[in-house]
Length: 307
Image (cartoon, rainbow, N blue to C red):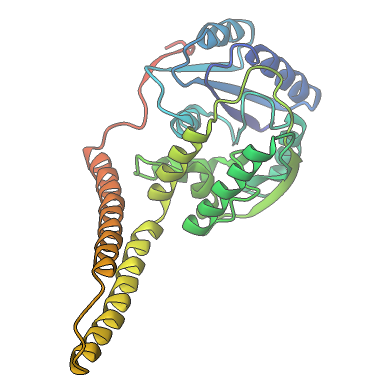
């Protein structure tokens, strides 16, 4: 019987974690699937780690990993993949918005020979209009920048062991699992699912964290912002060329050069483009700096596994 490992990043999920562990255990045992549940505590500020250790003491198929501090969801996913012992590995959220029954469907497709099974959102569940609009705008930017359709994509996936090994061998420190797992190729299929309501607690994603996540992932996976700098340079060159021709013609016709307001506006416009361009370039230099330091993606302070 093939072993299914399931990586579950957990950040301040003390309220929902016991229910998640119980439901997964029930569903997988009902389907006669051997499993390993890997809960990764991403430096939670509540009793998430205590709950994980309690669950691990009751169920030998649960592995707990505790970070020394909060390193982010991407780091938690890769830490879980490194500890996965299964022939295939699923990734899902701790709040049960990713339905466990769909995970079983993914596993059956893996048994049929598929090596990457992606969970695709059929619907996003109940969201207020403002949040839904913000998320939609966020995914449009991500899709354009990474050239991967992110509108219905998710971290809810199931990967064959060899696909997991390829991801772990990638040396970059700034990772974007959702795009990287699509980039590696292999025999791929998808499963649609409806995003479920959280069984407890609150979403950890605010507008600010989504924006920060977008910038980090775009820089980690795409050079599109750098191309915007080039585009802005070409635009300003064309504008300068038109104004230059206009100035020469006015001078040849004997008219005094006018337009002090225009000059001021041009200086402000060009200065803004230069400063924004420097900001984008500086952001990429900062990411290069982070990469060449070769610091670890995460630091594990303790686990529930016995040496």
